Image (cartoon, rainbow, N blue to C red):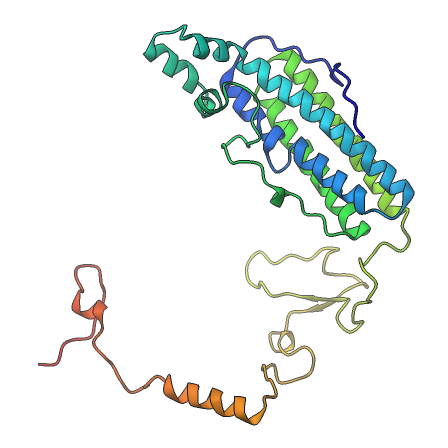
Length: 299
């Protein structure tokens, strides 16, 4: 059960309207790294969580993310407030109105379609989607995903802070950004309170392949570091040793019943290409400048 407190979690003070900036702020309202995505990610994880402590944490943070959604949405609404009134009351001449709405990018979209209200879209106008939620129902996987999500959200907030000189907005965004840090710390603690927490799942990896690093991108720019060298790693750069690492012949095969095997052979024979043929094709018949070499028609 949820109960709403009419006081925002953090005070929103916007110096002046700015529809263009409002559009950018939508990235954290209806974007993939935004507050709604975070709230839904953690809320749905909480519903399926079997551990009482993690369930409580996820519900707390999910609910806080909804409060953050309200804060960022209020910023968007305040930034659009002047344009909302002018548009609703036709307070400007046509040309001036058009220039006002388009100042700063896609602000005309939020003004015309949503009347200046916060919309569940990102800064490019793409609608919010549940596809942003990448939970998989395993706590160590989901906690790692949550840590990454909080990290990405912090970076987006940093970028938004850097595009405005409005002190009030910077202050509110700094609060929201800082809470991403706090949530990441909680998720980190929850992850490392599960022992062992790596690798995820129950089935162990094959020991013959768990410590091998394959150098598959070779040439100028190759580098070594703790990710591929040291006592933990068996570094393989020999091309022959990188193929058929199971010791087999590196081919794909399947045992088929005779009837199916015969059908496959018949299909292969019917659709076989004649390697000796050099037919004239539509590309040859319609060739023009820039077509390259083509097959000549028989004289």
